[in-house]
Image (tube, rainbow, N blue to C red; front, side, top):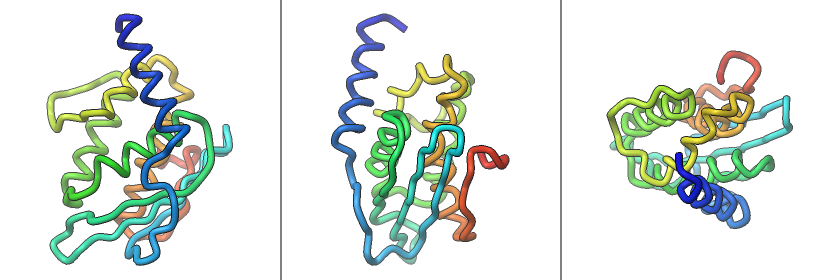
Length: 153
C-alpha cells in the first residue's frame, strides 16, 4: 500500500473516531448486543431496528475504545442502513477476510476498505472486528455479551 493511500485511510479512521456516525441511543431498537475487548478495554453497545422483511432500517451504537474500534463501529452503522440481514452477514464475512489478509471477491466494501492495513497488526484486528461480532450477536438476538477473548473474535 502506498504512503498516500495509507495516509488517506488513517485520515478516514481518525475522522470517524472524532465524529462517529450514528452514535447514541436507538429508542425503538428490536435487536441489540454488547461487545467487549478485555485486552484493550474497547466496549461497544449496538442497537438495530429490523423491519418485517428483514431489512435493517436503523443502526446506532454507543461505547468507548481506540480509534480503530470506534471508526469500525461508525462505518458499520453507515454501511448497514437499508441492508438485509443476509447482506449484513455477507458484509461481515468480506470484512473479516479483509482484516485477516485473505480478501476475496464479493460484496464491495466501499469505505470499509480503509481497514485493509489493519491485517498487518494482528492485535488490532480484534479492535476492528469487535463491532462486527457484536452485530452478529444482535442479528442472532441471543442476548450474549461478545468478547474478543472467548472465541467470538
